[in-house]
Image (cartoon, rainbow, N blue to C red; front, side):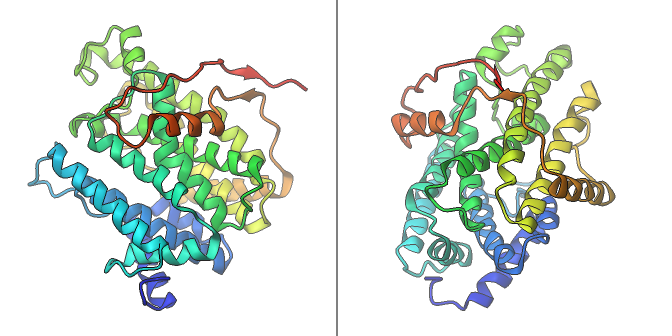
Length: 345
């Protein structure tokens, strides 16, 4: 495993990848013990590389001279290349790409499966096919692919066994919360790239015509939609915090720190109101240190039980993903909307 490269070389390259690609996750990851931190970086390198290949970018940024609305056929070819390289790496074959070789290594060390990886890649396939969510359930299925499934893989990196279903479910919740906050923050960027992750049913409710989401006339409705995303994220975030209590001390501290930082993104979007997309929301270094300090207190004290349970569970989203398959063009599988339920004592 590792494509014949030394573990040290793969870890060093992965560390460079995360330093360039995600300042927030870099800060939180340094709270892990050395072994967990290295494995988290190896996994991140694969995630980052897949994202860059799928979108034709580097460390999350495109060349300004290039067309943001990439050719769909080319995008599908890139996703297929991601899948082939990933499967080669998992089979212990060299890929000539450090990030995929890194995945092969961390997968062998932590028990990350092909099914877990394919769940993530299927999210890239949805984007490559020009997919749009029609319902809230469709949105959550997408979030499962691109973030919830990654949360499960991160749990494996932290040593959570495959039969610890409850803990894996909570790891998925955290990934869902992260992605929903990111979608709320990146509505303008996504629109500029020809993408929209706001469910069509939500847009219809707000009387926003197709393609008009960012028009000034609809800014008030947009604020409400972003608030809806953030509210759903907060429910999943609360569930995830309880699951973090089952982790080792440093792992719990790192996870709660990341939850605080990404949660602050959603809160900041909500607080800015109609000005939320004038400038990209960022969390400064000092603010991150404050969130890490708060996470330390919560790590020692424990998290409060959530008062609400989310509509969408990992089991529901996995089932919908299996039924829909990896091809985004097939009809979406409707998910049963059970509503947000108040937790019973």
